[in-house]
Amino acid sequence: MRKIFVEVYAHFSKEGEITPISFVWFDGKTYEIDKIIEKRNAASLKSGGQGIRYKILVRSKMLYLFYDENRWFVEFT
Amino acid sequence: MGRVILHCDLNNFYASVECLYQPELRNKPVAVCGESELRHGIVLAKNQIAKAFGIQTGDVIWQALKKCPNLVILKPNFPLYIRFSKLAQQIYSEYTDLIEPFGIDECWLDVTESTQILGSGRKIAYEIKERIKRELGLTVSIGVSFNKVFAKLGSDYKKPDAVTVITKENFKQIVWPLPAKDLLYVGSATEKKLSSRAIYTIGDIAKSSPEYLRRILGKWGEVLWIFANGLDTTPVTPPLFEDNIKGIGNSITLPRDLTCYEDAEYVIRMLSESVAQRLRQQYLKCFTIQVWIRDSSLFAITRQEKLQTPTFLAREIAQKAFEIFKKNWSFKNSIRSFGVRALDLVCANSFYQLEFDSLKKFKLEQLEKTVDQIRKRFGQSAVLPAILLTKSNLPCEIPLHNKIHPVAFFK
Image (cartoon, rainbow over all chains, first blue to last red; front, side, top):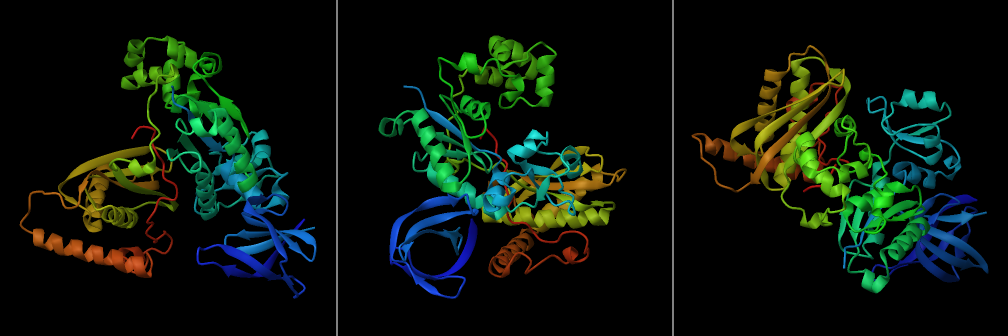
């Protein structure tokens, strides 16, 4: 399990809620987030970290995207 | 209905946070240690594997390495630990507003009122334990009881990742066989006094008479008797309601020993700046200055003296502290650690007898307040007393906060 830090484009609502829209993968390609299935605080025991965890669907693949102290990373096998 | 109090203790806190962020270390013995170059090189926390090698908090690094040569030694990352401490408290706050932190990794929670909505203390404890694990990736051990002292004993009873319930019915079976030193406020000196009178367990304390304990230990004897019998009624006090502060102090273990009065004057000034600044922040002045000195053989003394008029001026605090120091220290041994403390605090605008040169003092107060504002805007080292620029091998930053506040059970 690897921890891949990514650049994220996100929407900040007036209420202060952050919704990630897309991210730049290490190959330089930008991927749209098709759906956010779940959002909650969680620890990433596999790749190491803690923050708000977004369970997301990207091109029908399920991923965990973490927002950990101002940085975003993806748990990646 | 009795009270329901939880004591939550994050297990191996610093080491667990480090292992969370570095999963490759999870199966290795890990210890978080202070920096040895600054002579803070002791074990602050260790993980479960290191514990199995007999490594204890407070061990010097070389001792720890002797017990376990493969030990992974990490430097502490306090901002990260404080973040996790806050996150844990956020979770606790969903169960009650009565939360009393005891150090960075422990908290008491009074959930008496919440049990009517959320279920028994045991149920709440299990829920908190699971949430901490899932949301923070840490384990916590929780004691559930009807008073704070037994709740704390419960959280120590089984570790890690466990819940222990101590009730009015079962406390004699669970608590009384435990060694006396497990009880809050039984340190090594008290333990010695007790064991020399064949008082070995908490049950022995409970079964002794309070008068007898008072004769051995003074008023603390009775307090211990109350603790051991489960009669403690101390409330869980959130820091918000904390009553008046009793003293503001700062101390430091130095990167090199202090060997002359010039060195000491330097350190006193540095600490006094910090103490004075924090007094002003709290809008307080002090009547008494206390100096704490520990020499290279770890022998320590504390001396204090009263001031004529209360002050929050760094220069006055430093002057008094240096005076006390000169009277009480002859440099037979060099100094390893040093502390300055302001006591007998009064509100900064309270009345006192004026002196002939009060106007001058008033001007100095304005000056130091202005320095605070400059430091607030441009950083703590924006304005320094000239003396703090004279020694390159001693630290010269003026610490504004204690990293971790030591707290007392009785407030």
